[in-house]
Length: 541
Image 1: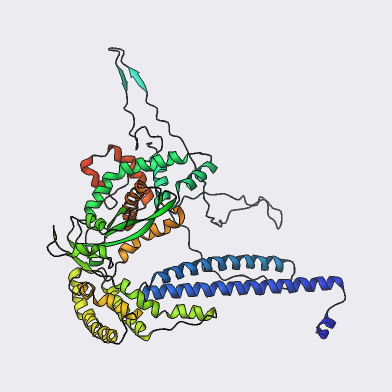
Image 2: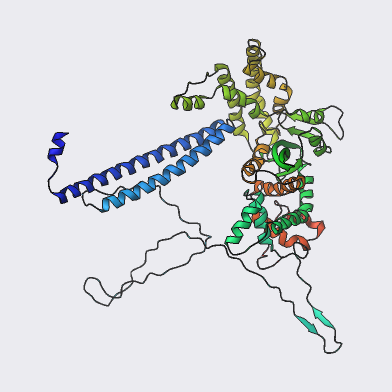
């Protein structure tokens, strides 16, 4: 160390220059480290996503892990960019250290449908070399920057002129335009935005009111709530048509989730039920749809009432309230239970979670015991899902043929192996409970081997409920039972639009502009899968 100090110059200016160089080199090293960390996080995220695509959704924990990795990547990318700029500024103070530049992927061009605004930067009027004025244009370089125009508000005034007849003195005037809501003041685009922000983007009305006030348009919370209630009533006929379409399916997915609802001095735990029609896995021609219902509790009478007129295949978890739906001699017809292999896989996955053990080890915690039986079971179930991915989208007959050829031997071998392993386990063992869950419902679990329409999992219903689970974190609870019922109607319409690859907000805006004067006999034309947007811009409600 003494030798290093002896090598330092005595001149103050030289010392300052050396300090600048050292700082620039340190900034460059930090920028490289941040870039490497962001790259590692990006590669880990890609590996997790590829594994998820290859082996199927392992558990809810896997989805949360992906969300956490994406947030971590976002922070690391921001830090890497910040450190890169710091390195550039540090290098600018000295000429002996080159600035660090991150390697970024090539930027994709901006979408062609976006409007372009040309801002001409005037060229030189005289030659910078000789000062001559005889310049000729060779071409131009264009640098595009993505920009956003702040949301603008406007008031549309409909002026209806009156005329009187000079012959008979009669007064003539065009009829008033239809309003979405009687005596309404909000246009369809505004109403669609309020509805989609609340039920599609999970923004409570109080937050919306605060944002609108900051934009110079103060709207009372009670006023926005009035519009939500009125729009729900206006859209109720569409919900009824959607309900009839979904419950006419050959096969349904069903599930439910909790919804806190405000009560006196507390919140009660209510339920939102969903039933999804999705025939795409077996190449069905019917469009997909989802219908939601609200109930104050989770009593079995609720799904029994929802499906009182349904007969066919029903894919759901092992909730006891569904039991009466599967009784023989039921009117109007039998409902056949198809169990969810993804539900059955989860307890085995928890006992064989290698990734969780790796994370525990990285934190210095004692690793959990990994059950080789559970790991073997997970691999057996994953083999079935791998076959399903290969036949997804084929017609029911092709799927059934492939399952009998490829899946049936695996399932038969699995059943023998499961019963052998179960006989070795005590009644209270976690693996024993997981095996019993499947073996007691083995007919429902193996129904996919006899019907090509059946899916291996109930993920369609779980995906439909994902928005509700996300929304609970924002709006915390429903204000009342009526609020829960309105939420069920709006979730049904918005989720169905998404299932049909339709922009929910654009669809709502167009439907609200047309529904007041649309013939009731042609109401199906406004359902998401039949919807053809019309040029309604400029019309007011």
